Image (tube, rainbow, N blue to C red; front, side, top):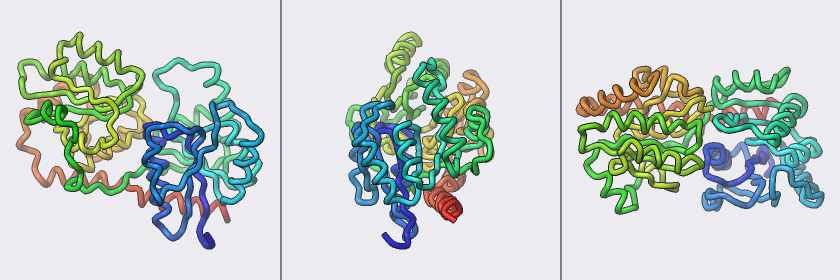
Length: 373
């Protein structure tokens, strides 16, 4: 398409996650402008977001790789030829085969570090090898590095010893949300469970560093002697069974709803009375922007990493230092439900609007132009 900058985004899979959603949303936003034509290259053909990719504004291809170290010369050659038809290769995750193909294509390379630092899990030999290869790639082959938060930038500069690479913090953005257009929860049993309740909720991938255990511990204390409160846990992941056992131990099973993965997560966020995101060292946290955009109180911890940058400046009272402080804050909102006036709701929505996909798209466009010069 003459006159447009051609950008090929790379993600490993279409699995449910913030990185994948962000790359899809950015590609869609770019293709709605007259400045950029963007496609997505997906490393392997799997993931719950594949349906989202079936959108005319989200053209995509699958590389056909089986794992992170799968090298097939025929596939490699096809990827190089594909990359040569683009101006910029924009990485959202690292894969050695795709990185080598980008180098061989001789195209400009942009790398967004989303902060997948393996927090909360044991580092394997494969992780160590990948980190060394990523470090070399970032310092020797990438033309521009972006970070989704100051937290991610500071950690990355130390982890990868970034030297002379041009870099910048470009905050993640979401598409504008019209809360009046968000549909109700489709699942009838879920609606019945939540009806007329004070809902403390989170929407998250259930990983260790998400620290949902802190929310469960706090809710167990908060919910004592209360019959009109429920805990809503939307998502799935490797620690779900562990969290389920903790709910049983705290004897709050009858007040807790595990929904599993939900494609229409906004309908659950709209139902929440208070959103809590208890992550530790979260690189960014789009979910906090999403709940704020719906006008919901959004509570995070002091050690929340990049998510702290979303909440602290405008709503410092919703930053807590420990589980006891979270319990106090939940009690505050429970006892003061009448303070949820239109002015406060509008403040949250306005603040969230600063993290929009259009600003993100424009920031990347400016960097694309700069490195192509």
